[in-house]
Amino acid sequence: MSRVLRQLVIIPLLALGVALVAYVLIDALPGDPARVVAGAGADAGNVEAVREQLGLDKPAAQRLLEYLGGLLRGDLGTSFQTGRPVLTELLAVFPTTVQLAVVAEVVALTAGLLIGALAALRGGRFASNALMTGSAVAVSLPMFALALLLQLVFAQWLGWLPPSGSGGILSAAIVLPAVTCAIPSAGFVARFARASIAGHLDDEHVRTAVAKGVRPATVGRRHVLRVSYGPLISVAAADLSRLLGGVAIVEVIFSWPGAGKYAYDALVHRDLPALQGALLAITIVVLLTNQFAEIAYRLVDPRIGAHDD
Image 1 (cartoon, rainbow, N blue to C red):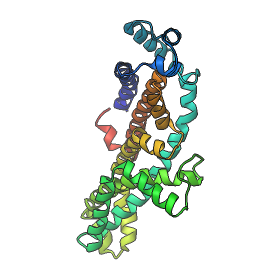
Image 2: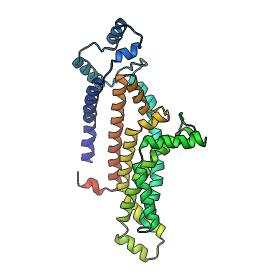
Image 3: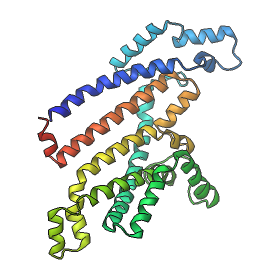
Image 4: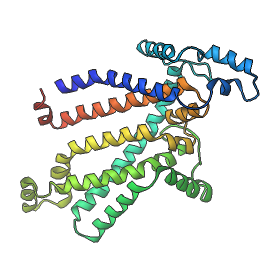
């Protein structure tokens, strides 16, 4: 576990580096945040007063040092739009993003494992090729196009589901955004699951079970899937990290009030502290998700950690 501990120590340093780069890039964005906050009709005097109030009149180096000092104290700054602490707002919206990502990943894993297992156990058949072709198409679909298509068909044409909104994991509003996120992920999981399962079909213990007359479904469940769990955990964690980091476009299209939409709104309104805080929070969650996945992988297969300690 020494490698895991080393990586846990490195995560704050990586997050600090990301915060530094994000601050510099966001601060260089075109536009005047003071003008946006003051309003289009404000005169030059009001704009300068707002700039001074927001601290934007200070030199860039001083503002950067104050921002980094605040991070070390756990202070992400104050939102230009609302005047509330960014950390408080992120704690309110981030659970909604996690809800959406987890529901989408559960759907993706369930569908992906089923499709991948069927394709592996029916290798060389038309059904296997059709399943893998479908998974390739799912992976290739642009997220925004898929979101708009599902919204058009199931919300506007058929009227089965709400086109936007929010709610818990059992609400109707989560169905369309979760399915939008899950379809490409299911294709990704299915392709990996097929390769992982097919690679173990010729293992000696699998051939022995088949020779003894064990049912194919039992062989797949007890002997093949069991040895494929480790790599699949890594794939699921990587995909969950991708969802957490790239769910913004889905949240915007479906007006899902998560961290991605929060970051988008901050970008539109030039709310620099909110945008910087959202990017930093997403980065930290992605890093921690990857680290917990590695820990889980090592628990499933202790041989992995034996080479590092």
